[in-house]
View 1 (cartoon, protein in one colour):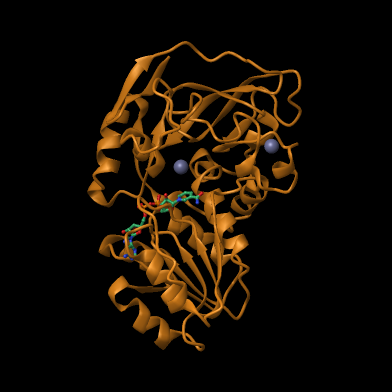
View 2: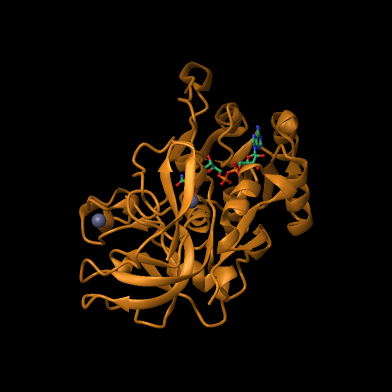
Length: 346
Ligand SMILES: NC(=O)c1ccc[n+]([C@@H]2O[C@H](COP(=O)([O-])OP(=O)(O)OC[C@H]3O[C@@H](n4cnc5c(N)ncnc54)[C@H](O)[C@@H]3O)[C@@H](O)[C@H]2O)c1
Ligand SMILES: [Zn+2]
Ligand SMILES: [Zn+2]
């Protein structure tokens, strides 16, 4: 089968590989029907993910059909349509039992697929701990609707959940990239009083205005002034930082009111400064980390009920045979791309 492979810094190539075989009784093999390209794939390509293993098949956002399962797999069976979770987790260690699956202590725990073990930008993928890593897709949910469940939508869901959003809150989301847009959908589930999105790109601002007319859209240069004008207590009650630019962490805490929660989803290229003397007396709570992607059942239920719809994010679709063109478009952010679906021929 053909697989997009991480060769070394700066290089991905389509190579020929054998169809994956079962290794553990808890494994499943999934036939990938639709996959996507994530910003993290670009980080691997550029050599900025030291854990990424050269030779690995990349891709960690995918849906498919279960081809075979090991004898210890109970939740899914051959023929089931499934969403694949970006995180591999045992479900039994201290961290898993607490729901902190990102810190699973299994050697394959955490983000392994498409990084340390072969991922999904190919035809078949082996998924370890299949009972945790796969979630059955309800019949009324399409592949497109389920595509982001295991990665960026899980991230948005987690970010909104840990932000403890209430009905009276003004929530500021910084960054309306794919992950920020997923976060926005999940924040809406909590029905806060006001949602404000700060985004610098005009096309992405327009996307938010078109799809979510009740959301206030602002630009970074006006952000602090606008937050004072639009909030009752000198800033946002909740700030979710999903941009990850050089100055957005500073913007995030400055835009927050005293005693706010600031959730940092973004990953930065450089260390960030926590200027405690300037923050003194603001009594902020910071939350941060890697997604704990263990709410996929709940997310698929919300999609099935029509409460979340991320299909507008799929601005482009390519067949697998054109995956290199798809990367080129995604990497260079041409044609106002947000996300790309990569379809495998039957
Ligand atoms: N914590 C996790 O587990 C997790 C999971 C997924 C993604 N992430 C991180 O979330 C971040 C966003 O991911 P993405 O895929 O949406 O990436 P992205 O780069 O497409 O999105 C970032 C958005 O922020 C906007 N932006 C840049 N500078 C800005 C500024 N000064 N003010 C407002 N907006 C600004 C960009 O125009 C872009 O739309 C990244 O840092 C990514 O690594 C973290
Ligand atoms: Zn990803
Ligand atoms: Zn574990």
